[in-house]
Length: 514
Image 1 (cartoon, rainbow, N blue to C red):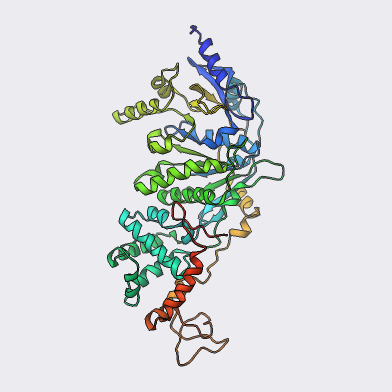
Image 2 (spheres, rainbow, N blue to C red):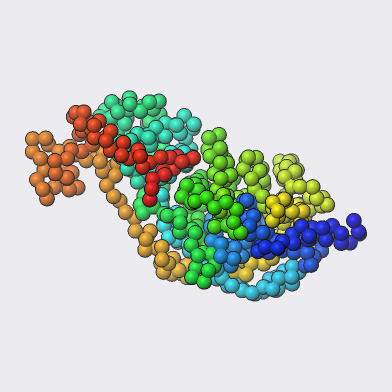
């Protein structure tokens, strides 16, 4: 090794000299000097092998996401971004030149040109500015819903039995009031006989689930579940000019519900997994999905939940989807998931406490051997600098490189709120998802008043006192349960037909043909 670092810098640069298309991250840092002649890149072909973007608050993780997303879009790859802080909407607008941008681009050898990217903006349940994203309760599934409701493993298993019962009996679970109606029915006097048929579900546990659902709904969470359900194929769109659309999920309005939005992100990923065909290794991914605040997904997760995450991440790469987890330190991600993340972009870490020092040591151990003193480098990195290693085109890890990252070409900050609102309302998907729909489902069936057997409802007349039009010569579901065995025969018939269409995937999400 020479004193000026020429030899190690040369070796590092050779490790990032790829033949195929690649994202340009920045230039090598050695002994505090930025080496523009040693660019650091990530091959597009290996981005479906997943990755990690980590670092302490304020070290530049968000700008790294923006830098990668805009280059992916320019390469024709759609991108999904979770915008927790509300400052990624600027990806749709050209950046503003200033002295810092000019200085950074000169240091890393970047020809900086201001440019926005085609973007769509979404919001969970329509809370905030964005196209509403909803899921039906049945498609969301019992495992993810149990995570949102903070149920223990026993309660989670019991919730799964409730879903199984609803599937078998033809009780559609579109929104939370549907699920609440089914659980309330099972613990009611009329439903006790049915509760006995749901093996392993006790009245006490059903009561706990019901109270959790009621409290959850009272917190305003009802708007996240219902119809029209978001079709995750929207995330795979490209613009007419061939650039990938950047789908930005705006989350500032639900920052106080981290468990909810992190689990919803997992639902999006799980839904993509079950819908996409196998493609194997391609020259570029179909979608790159940035999973922000990833530690929230894993905190307090059951063993079964973690196993489902691990399996989804392992298998979704063969469907052309790359996943980048974004968090503060690698220790926030379980080891089985971390082992599948081929690319690492580690921003600065702080070591102010003994716990911080342990996290720093653990982070260093996740990197291959390198000529750097990584503990020293990681605590000394500035904003917009990171330690990087990725999978090369051969599938082998590249040399560890300290990197000064490029400046994003799009606006580094939020766009004007009025402009964002205008863009949302003018977008094509807005008309499809803006208005919520409430079809007949479990709630309506279970709360319908029984029709009088001696006086069938006349066609065209409303049954009293139920305000909804009654179908001629058809009793409500509750009446059938209470009155006779007709319900058993009907439900068995409906359940048999529905059972052929509904199976549940790794997270218990619905796999009905859409």
